Length: 169
Image (tube, rainbow, N blue to C red; front, side, top):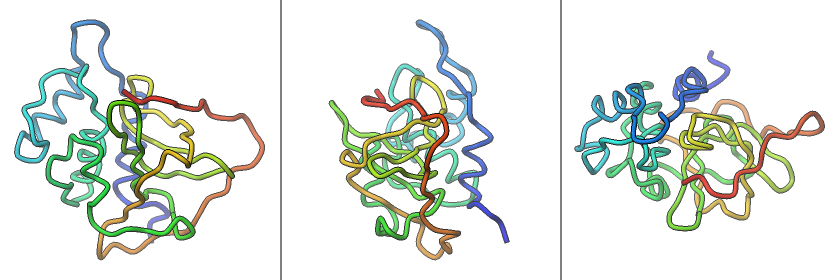
């Protein structure tokens, strides 16, 4: 039995993928968009300067054979996707949706402290990275229906703190 869900393994493999500087675009990120297409993303995606956390989440889910929500590029579309999971049942790979100024953000749960979730996501500091996001900003926790939850909450104590993100645009 796998220790992590397939979509989280796919997400970890993409760590470090970064937007291109200026008017340039990272061909890897644009390749994800081309593979998924406007039907899945909800729009024609053609620049990595457009927020891409939903694109990243949709790519990882698709890599695992799971259908993302309609208009997957829009982070808040993930708030109603599949099945809710209670905070006390969270496990690595749970989809977390956050409120932010001007929109939303979506990423994958890795663990938590008393006040923050540790999140693996795209478009966090313009790259695929792991950051901490305040639990108070979380508006939804989701898990794919019919997929067993592997593990449970991961409590993070001690050690170096990850950077805290306040806006993932």
